[in-house]
Image 1 (cartoon, rainbow, N blue to C red):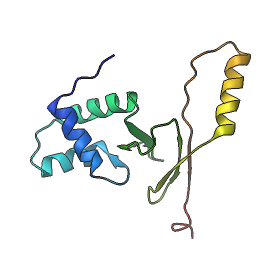
Image 2: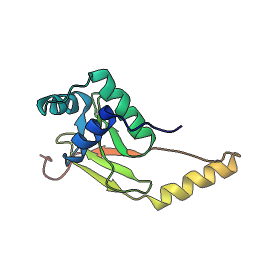
Image 3: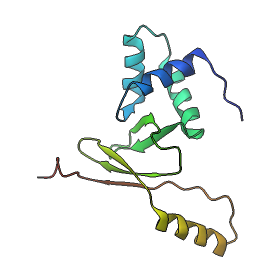
Image 4: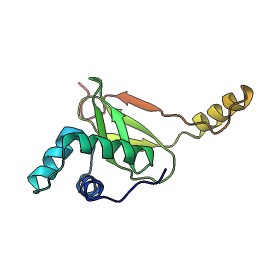
Length: 128
């Protein structure tokens, strides 16, 4: 599926490119509106879903079930370690996990495997 380069998509990408960390769709929508952009919140969600699907945007889930988004820093497949308190997120490689997932797929006759690993904890700065 080819994604169209629309003004709405460019507005979402431009806003995400200005941010360092993860942001909710609502926060992103407000940022675009504060800059004078006119885009519906539903369109922001739609564009984020498309950008996640194409691998251009990372998404993590908070303990409250809220999705947070940011532009991918790493082009290759990666996973996240996220602080549940402050939201600080680190991209991590997991070669042992990749090998394990491939082996499980082979063992059960599956191909073209995809997976997501998200670890959450409390970072040193937030620990009691």
